[in-house]
Image 1 (cartoon, one colour):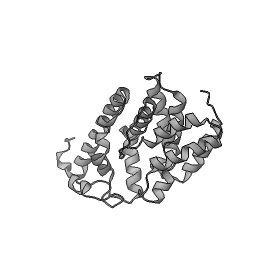
Image 2 (image 1 turned 45 degrees about the vertical axis):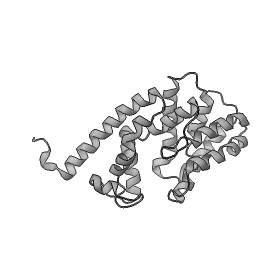
Image 3 (image 1 turned 180 degrees about the vertical axis):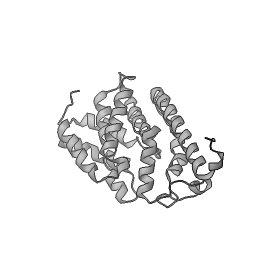
Image 4 (image 1 turned 120 degrees about the horizontal axis):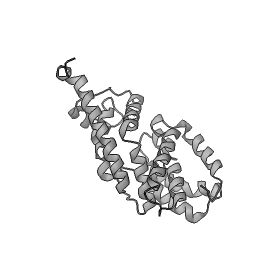
Length: 221
């Protein structure tokens, strides 16, 4: 698609910025979110494609700052503040930058800011889809491994745990966030995709629980 600015230069800048981000929110994650956005745009041709794709590209632009502060600042808010200047530097119009900034500000699950446009809804859903299914499982374990967390734990251990702790396992992420994503999706197409991916995750963690804590209940060979 044609962009109203220097898109190749912006893409390179984002790739460079995210090169220091953790593997859960690196440039590969951004590319997957952009692919998810492309899928959702097929169901909503009335949405402004340029706004969606730029917001998907920039949604985690402030992740390195949040990771450096171990969650003490909000990457969505910081990213939204950075978007106008960043897009201006690459010759994108100010009106477009405002719409992109709004979508970046409201893409976060653990935030009270609700998306206020179809474009922002699509970006929100595209990001959440990358937290579900096989990719979501992989990302949850990448984060847990980075924090030196346990492979698995009991529900009561996981739910009582602090973030960034030994008990902050992939299972904890599933219990406190990932299992609830389908009901939070903003578009009907995103919700249908999320339901299928969440079911896969539920089956996975049930199997993991059986293997770790109830091996006697596994099927006989």
